[in-house]
Length: 432
Length: 162
Image 1 (cartoon, rainbow over the protein chains, first blue to last red):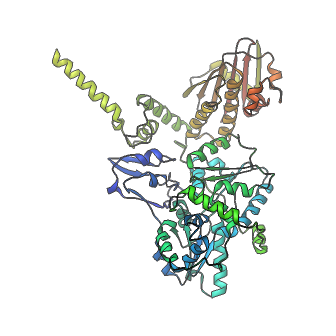
Image 2: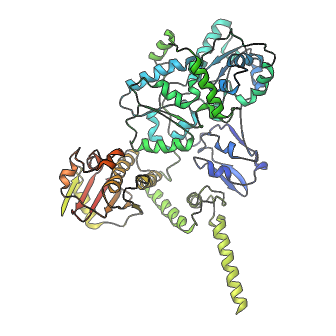
Image 3: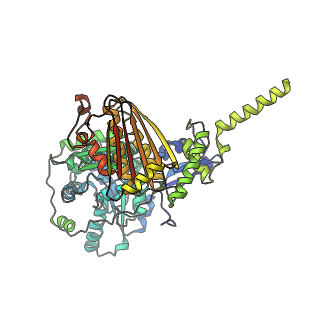
């Protein structure tokens, strides 16, 4: 496992880095450091939350997504839209036109995550009721949260819902359907996700857990946005020939998702923002939230509408989606094949392996010695957590020193005091 | 003065020897616990758990320690005039000492009964005081030792072996 390399949907452009340490301080898994004035990053720790990308003012950390040109490699191209897509456009443009405009980009057909989310709610409820021994059960559709649990809370891995994510299920569904209907072979069909965040790009390029299916690429909403806006100008009026699934859009907003899964008996909760998610996971570890049946956890504020590859502000997008939800008719989505596939176990996923970054050493005796040294160094450090050394906190600098990845002289405050001290001494001498 | 001992089966001899000698811990952490400070209640047990996690203590032990420490911390917060916790970490066990400044317990056996609680309205409204704290600590500890004197204070010691 140690030799495994992890794909990450972000790229460091070192020449742009000013060494400001803004990203270092914001990273929830302490994956970033500034050394010799430039950013470096630990791929084992990164969970693709994208916080550093938003934090960087100098374009030194940028998202990696697939280019729209990638679709040209395939004879038949399908786009699967994330639920947050519908919230990106004003109502004057309309959800139907925004969907139709996808075809102008060169896609042959367009599917939506929201087509099956209502059905997934049923499956999740079924899973909750049949797994009474696990409480709470944690949502699995945010890949950044799943990776966070892998690296920082490996004990909670069994709590993760073990049903495939909707977009992954749709990919299987469609690949099979298109093959049958067009007679094309599987590799002539390109299936692309239109995604709101970098974590989903990673999920596409490194399928594991609830994103088990191989997809051909992930394109950022922000990348296609300007094309869509341009193309929509050519549409005269609202197209009504497109089937829409407004009820299923609730997945873009985590509070709504928790509400939809709730049948009036279950206790559900929604938590958004990676630092809030960490707080809740700590409570779950202490068994303080066992009375909850299901908890929706999302890296981004408000849920997928808060993803960094969206264009619209998360609150505006959420308000638009809520409006669609209010105006839509309640629907009882039921698909027999779908149900059969679920009961047959087709949507089950292999439990994820832990990737713990927490343990100092496998041997507890060695770990104890290390911790003693860390404590000793930590006591000498000023405790300001200023990050000027390039490590996020004084404590992490102490850890970095113990593993020979930094030196105590990296502490700017200590160095300055030392300098002052020696200046002072020298002055005294001169006076004498 | 009331005293209470509990040993998981097979632990007594080992624990008695430990108390007779009380070896110097590898790592020692100290935390203050303030009376009725429900905002910070849980911070000390979270720090204790974090250290053990970093040391690679098995997850089941981690879980038991976290629960026992949390419950004991809440007890000091909710029922006493404040106190402290010391976490002593060894290569084979963790030894926690909770000391408070009173008012002490009359009858420890009674306090160990599930459902028995002396918590007042305010504590109950906070969602604590269901009378399950001490039984839960006992359930998760290998060794539990409580010494208490009504009108004085309580000292609660927990040992959990890895």
